[in-house]
Amino acid sequence: MPDQKTIGFVFIEGFADWEYGLLAASAVEWFGARAVSLTPGGKPVTGISGFRLTPDRSAGVDENADLDAVAVIGSDQWAGKTPPDVAQLLNAVATRGGVVGGICAGTLALARAGMFEQAKHTSNRRDWINGHEAGYAGDSNYQDVPHAVADGKIVSAPGLAPGTFALAFLKTLYPERGGDLAQMRTLFAREYAEAS
Image (cartoon, rainbow, N blue to C red):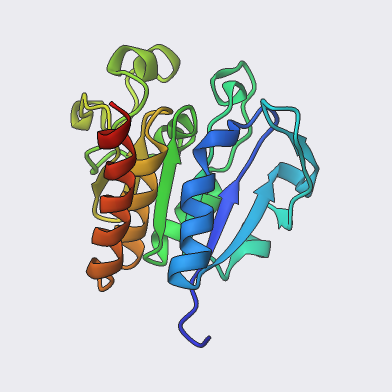
């Protein structure tokens, strides 16, 4: 596919297994994207479930010049004392006009990279993100909502919003695919409407 888009998913040790599935699978199955898994140093990591992930490549800038978008998946280690630094990768993707997203603690990587300086965004709570990145650039742009927020090419979400994260990310990456996105939204909404 000549217009196939490539999305990098950044995973670190202790990644949250529920945060990437809807986005990765929907991007590939519905939109024809190519999903690649990235880890710092290209080393295998283990999710909260204990599932082991062997990445396609490292999170280094040189290996990822083909990315049209990047999604940083949450892990408690993003909030730890020595979190990995993926700012170069995020800035490289943003500089070439790509979509940069983060969910749950993955939003801390975006905050550290300056992605929120000019973009409305959300995370696990205002006091939570400030507790880990006090005075980060763009603090005043924080939106206290339980769903994903997209502003320009920056997408963020709290950890319990993988559905709206997938929708907002894909809408930002594929703005011309409104019909498919509306169908996805309807399917997601139906699950919750009928279960309650």
